[in-house]
Amino acid sequence: MIEQRGKTLEDFLPPATVVLHNDDVNSMDVVVHALLASVPEVDLERAAEIMLVAHNHGEADVISRPLERAELYRDRLESHGLTATIRRD
Image 1 (tube, rainbow, N blue to C red):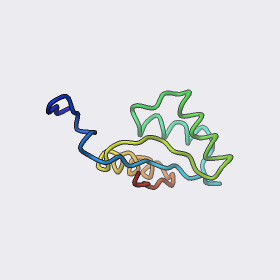
Image 2: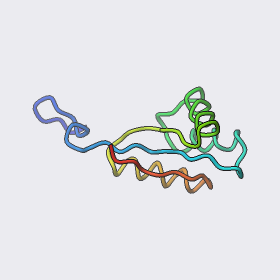
Image 3: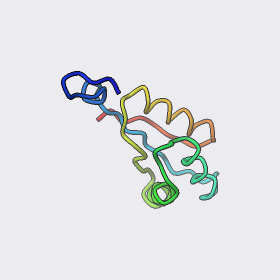
Image 4: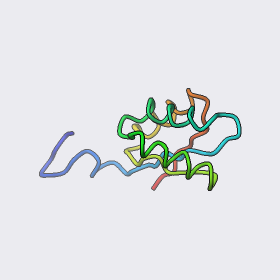
């Protein structure tokens, strides 16, 4: 991280949240695997939680990061056949 007087890059860039949407095509296992492969900060327990929230409520917040990083994670999820969007916080 670039630091300037105790601030990190995230302090200067507004956050954006990756949102995973439920679908009726991919199995739960596929969704968990895609989350683990796409978002390095997500562990198995968190991936399963995200998948269940999306399944039960239609969507789930995956992670909040600066926009460019959030877009990367969204694109990775979409490359696995999932539907994901960005919500500007």
